[in-house]
Image 1 (cartoon, rainbow, N blue to C red):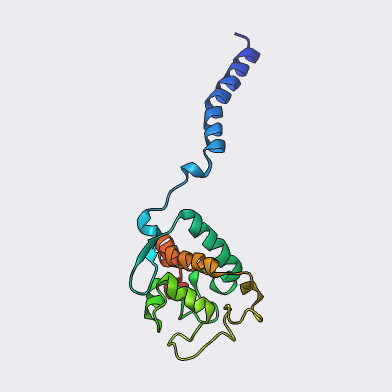
Image 2 (cartoon, rainbow, N blue to C red):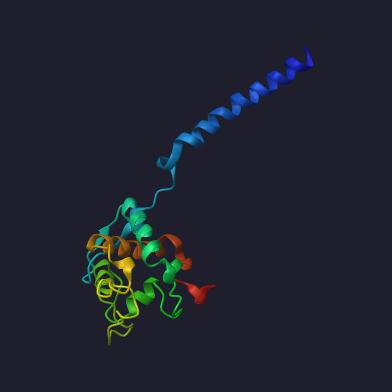
Length: 170
């Protein structure tokens, strides 16, 4: 067999072996991506412990809203202005009142208070109450706040200590 013909057959064989894999990668898309478990997507909805299971679509929408509205100061769940108060589950649960449910986080995003709950911090923290100063809050409604809160509660279940760990863990 001529060397040219032999190399052409090898090239054709490689293409036939690689083509199905390339098509699988191109067309498989998100449908074959790793799915989050219902346990990861289930978070407290209300202060009384009522649970809700969010959809992946809700969490992704919440992540996008969080990153655009909160991510400047809370990238990765930390608090850049005070690394002792992160958005990790333990810290949220120890706040007064506890901020470890969707409803309580929505309440906080409407009118934030100090960690001990003693006074309003809406003049220094973005909220609906201070949307005249923090313009990124102007376009958010209650549904958006619920998506952000849901993302904050799901993120540590997916990311582990990387969420909200800040200087404590790294």
